[in-house]
Image (cartoon, rainbow, N blue to C red; front, top):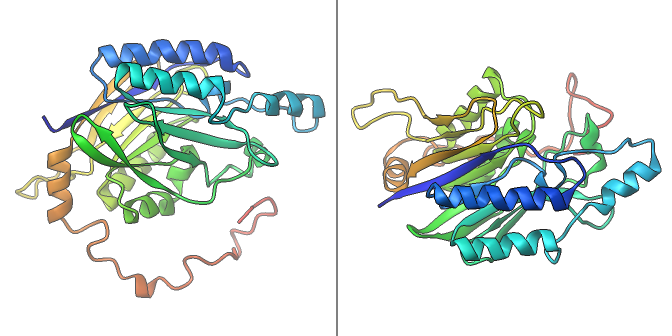
Length: 295
C-alpha cells in the first residue's frame, strides 16, 4: 500500500468570480475523493480563473484586488472544512491578499483540514500581466500527513517550472513530491522540460492545467524513476490528459520512488556546489537584460 494518488483537476473556471469557483471546486474535490484520491490539485489561481484586469484602468484593478482572499476567508475555510470531511489533502490556488499588490498562491491543506504549506509564485511573468503581482521569495517544503505516512511536499506554479532553480531548491529542501498548478499552453517543449525536472532532481511531479479553451489541458504527472534496476530506460510519464475537462488520477509508488532516490546518481548525490560561484548573482548580462525584470 505505498501508492499515493493525486487527482489532477483539469477544468474551467469563471473569471473574477470566487464564489462560483468555490462551488465548482467543491464538486471537483468530492469527485476526486470518489475516485480514490489522496491529494486534489487545482490549476493556477483557481479562485478567479487566472484572470487579470486592464492595468491602465484603476477601476478594473480595484475590482481585481477585491477578489483577493486570505487564510481567514470563506474561500479557504470551506476548502479546509472539505479536506477534513473527505480526509483528503487539497492544493487550492487563489489570488492572495497581500500588503501592496496581491500574490499568486497555493495552500496545501492536509487531510485534517490544516494548512501545511503556503507558497506564492516566485517567478512571476513580469514580461506580461503578472507584473501586477507581488512575487514570492522562497520555496518551502512541508511534511504532509497522508494515509501512507508523511510525504515531503513542495510547490511551484506555472513559469516556476521553466526555471531549473525552482525544482532544484525544492529538492535540496527535501521535497519528494512537487505539486504544480498551471495556466498556459503545454506543448512538447514545456512537457519535455517538465520531465527533465523530475529526472534531474529525482522528485515526483504532478501538474494541473486548465482545460480548453482557457488553456490546452495536458495536465500530467511524471515519476523520477527513469531507469529500472537493470538500467533500462523507462518512460517517466504516469499520466497525460487530453484537452477536455476531467479529472485524471496519477499514482505514485512512494516506496519505489524512495528506493530509486537512495540508489541513483542524480539529485544531490554528486553535485559540486563549490564550482557554482555566481549562480545567485542579482545582475543579468547581455543578451538577457530586460527593463521589466524584477530580480
